[in-house]
Length: 475
Ligand code: ADP
Image 1 (cartoon, rainbow, N blue to C red):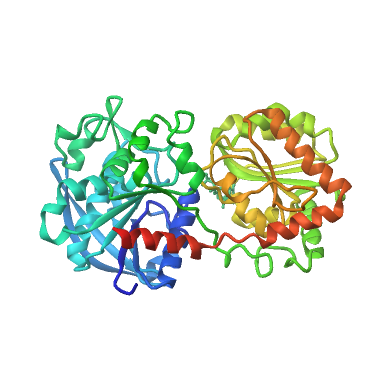
Image 2: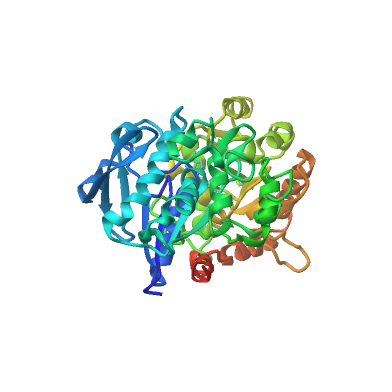
């Protein structure tokens, strides 16, 4: 394995910059690969919003110019050497912004990033066997390598792996993006990177990579259907033979109730009293009455993907029960307004926390009895895996990674680690929630068994990392 060299390219990486699950994967998978002996290095943009405490340990390793359209732009590369070596691609004009993305010139910013990553390699005199690209931001690397750079001897025999973390976000830009990438108009057709009159950065990854993966086996199948394919299902069907579903893992060093410093009290599978203590302290901190009622947690981006309209449709009915609902999330205003109003209408039962707070998230994972994830689609999902290890029972829709990680609890055989519904309908969700509430209230011994099953589930990175290595070696 010592010989295998991999460059992992991502627009966000924990602990430096995060908007979603991609950052968690980019923070954990390279570490797991390093553990099993891969020479793995990471490349990401040098955003100015990265905590300055890391700057002291960054060292400039090279600088050069890349062509973006008709212009030459300066790239500086900084290396951060701790654990997995990480290369930060620096250009203040492109990455000195308040957010990671969402700007009009995102096509140019990430064209610059992709070209800079490729041109960094000869400067470093380090030739990876594999460049592993992720989501739309690094899709262009696959087409640039295959169609332009591979003619240069240095780049020959470098293979690319492309991973889809969320097919919904594709990086669709006007056709002028082609010239930013330095690509001719021969790629402007449906079997190239054209997409309904535009250019699609994700398609560059789908078509021009040597291997294609996504983050769960079920999502790999779903995205080949019109309901989940975000208009790329046809493209993905064509690539079906080389599309692999490899389930994400969880970083059990970070998510472990026995040692988690964010909790009020630490606990494990043998000391569940500590979990109850977390619930009481959380109720107190959020201003909820301290009662022995089931507490349901919901920690999520407030986006349509997450199935929040189902809660909008049945929330009030469900709140007729003696329950508490704790929300932590940011996102679309329509959902922020809805949860704010729900808190206003049910102040004894609902706590709506409409901000981002990592430490509070851990407290909610630990203090809640159940965790709701009624997603419309879910490539892999971390929330359900995190809640399992805190003994908080997931109630999920059977889709994507949720289907691959949560097995419905069967009261007779006492197998399963959660509650599951299939149809995307508010009554299906309500029924699953009522089943969970009934089990919690009427069958405390069975509830303990579900907690046991949940906390014994193991979705570590080690297994996924081995699957990636197998794929790399196959290339
Ligand atoms: P996605 O990547 O689609 O947003 P995932 O379930 O894969 O969904 O990952 C979301 C991650 O972000 C989880 O670790 C979750 O705990 C965390 N998270 C989401 N919203 C918040 C928030 N408001 N505060 C703290 N953590 C959050």
